[in-house]
Image (cartoon, rainbow, N blue to C red; front, side, top):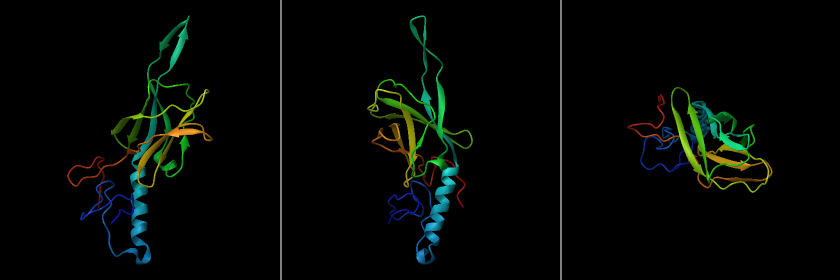
Length: 173
């Protein structure tokens, strides 16, 4: 059996181990189970206040390259990027090595940082960072432009529910 909210396999559990949706059986006659799952997904997305990328800026001062303080650039709110790519307004020239650091801000004090290994975009020009939250409530990252981009092989988990300790403290009914 699969969770109606995130699609994870559910085996003899009362809640999905990934998103925490209560397992409901025999409610599909009127589409009630799917409407509960859709409402749960919307609620989970509302807990994410923003998704940002770490930006390293450099300046050339009298022929010497100097690093400026690190900063985070907002890409999008979670509700804007469900099943569609949203691109950061800023454009980037390159990034160090083969990794990109993202931060997911949840309502309240919780922030989850993830380092993602991703291929550099095949462009000689500036490029953007894009994100999409899939139906399975995972974050996929894109580098490039709307017409030509590379994307992460692995999607980042946004949630992990356990009956003992939820990854994200949610008030479940």
